[in-house]
Image (cartoon, one colour):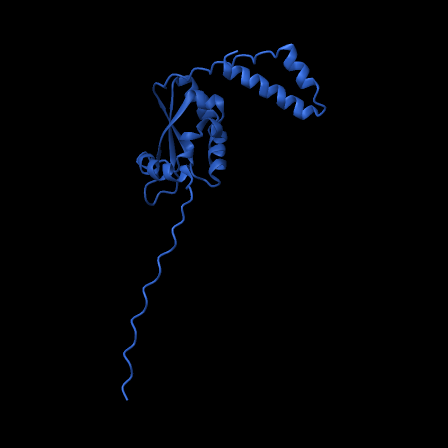
Length: 172
């Protein structure tokens, strides 16, 4: 008796489509990473969070340019090239290099950078300070009385804030 021919295996079912939003940061990172990688940067974070990583004083006077990876066979780690606007601050930064390196490597969680190379050049002008928000408008006597009639202090504060917001949006 002849055996029936084996059936070809069934094609696997495609995974069901899921229509859910994807984090924007993942999409942006995948686009920006190749561009930033040309400068040798390990991560976009060092550029985006430079002031948070090194502190406001260093960030105001120094700007990261690129990361130089060590040559094959050399014992040293990567070098971060930083531009300073004044030679005097370059000396200050050289003196504080261990602290700056510790902050950078602490941010990444490993020894990403082993030394700084300081270049003298011009820095972009500092960003202007944001304008202070105008004071919130005062509530009328009637509005204050209505809010004061509410017993719960949290709700009363929320209602007062809502009234001020509505007056601001309405133009006074």
